[in-house]
Image (cartoon, rainbow, N blue to C red; front, top):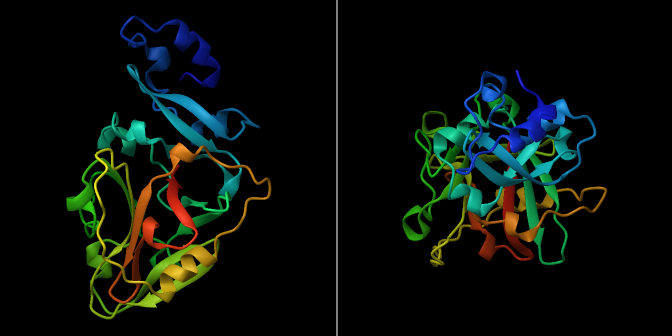
Length: 259
């Protein structure tokens, strides 16, 4: 199996179409992710990388190598236009945490490690590229359209009840009681390449306030490039909340990494 030391050899083997040979030495190497870079290269720095997803496709990503244990891949908007859902899922191996970063008007980018509440710890997180089967639909799907990144927590079968639901953020258990069995439980990031206006729907609540009040500043103050952030919505319940980035004071956009 090839490792990261093979990258220069791979680049030297690229043909005119941008592909590398279908060689046994490289086949098991793909996809390259920030998690694999961290695992193979101790001390790898956070920053923008161009990674190879398969023999003929590279994309631009931001790798977070420190926060939350590191190894989180953040996709650029243009990457979403060139990936398939199956390619995205091949990069997604840790089904139990996401890393949220929020771009604020004051220039800071606080973060939150997102995971399931302890009572739902055995339910894997959902990641989809313009796909959310088994989960509630994003509000802006019909208005803004694809491509979008979907980050789901509880599937419909687990969220259609009057139970306590929510998520953990930086270790804090953020909980609401579903009042009407509405099974919303997600963040969604939209590229909005067509510059369409989002919904005016807005249901503020303590649950959303708690999400953003429990973000933390990264010790280094290091920031991601602004173009890695996207318009986003987050929807919970049934008496949780619904908010999107153009409705939250002091917040411009979201970015969410996976590994």
